[in-house]
Length: 300
Ligand SMILES: C[S@@+](CC[C@H](N)C(=O)[O-])C[C@H]1O[C@@H](n2cnc3c(N)ncnc32)[C@H](O)[C@@H]1O
Image (cartoon, rainbow, N blue to C red; front, top):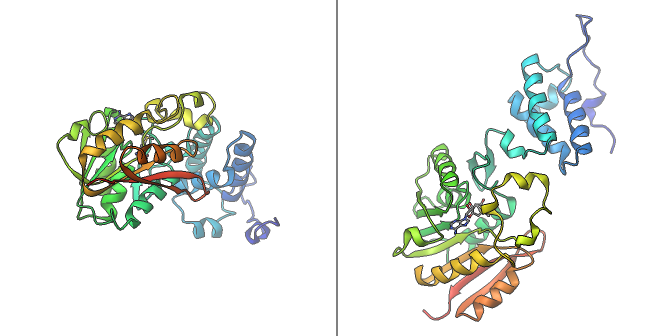
């Protein structure tokens, strides 16, 4: 692709005669090349995100000021962040917070980085006539709080409860709730056990669903996610099976269970649920992979 129009603008003179600091555009171009060489899958957007984070400039401001030199403070901070990204630390850890599902989320090693696929799970549930007006909602294995907070932001009238086995994840989720000014009840424990006796109109979950055999085969960034958040036994369905068994007794009549699973096991799991008295169907993600299971109890 030909260079963008701003790359042809004349460079401003350097009145000091000293070696000029890199301009915004030069830093971004060089950083993207280094990230590409390091195997980062989205080098340009990562470089752009770091530049936006450090300069605090909007996209338009960055274009208009593309040839201005970086301040020494920004330049030093950018280089520190770039070194961390080159070592394949996730971009999300290097940013103050990320936009996800209508909320701002801080990300760190205490919990899984929320994925775009899970935003689609949130969208599917919000668009589901049987779920969208749910009064009592549970997010099981909440991690950073993503689904719970995304739901609460979209449906402030519903009561949202979120559980996780990990105390560290729940601490981050509570910080994210405060960051967004949202009120969600958090409880630590195994799946629905900490809220035993409560009934829910909607149970959302993105449980650990990777087959254990994926260990050691994932991108370096994924090594930063807690193992507790990733693996779900031999076929990846251990946690999903336990959750469905608990959810059968926790859903209100007409209540819905929405799960995110793996493209290799979601269809099998929907069939398994259908054999256990659920009305279960599987939905694709935006790449066409069958990833999301929607299930209602057939005999209510
Ligand atoms: C795939 S992550 C999902 C995190 C978050 N919901 C998201 O979508 O970004 C799975 C989460 O389930 C939690 N978890 C694992 N085993 C659990 C269990 N037995 N009971 C409750 N939570 C569990 C993990 O700590 C992790 O936060």
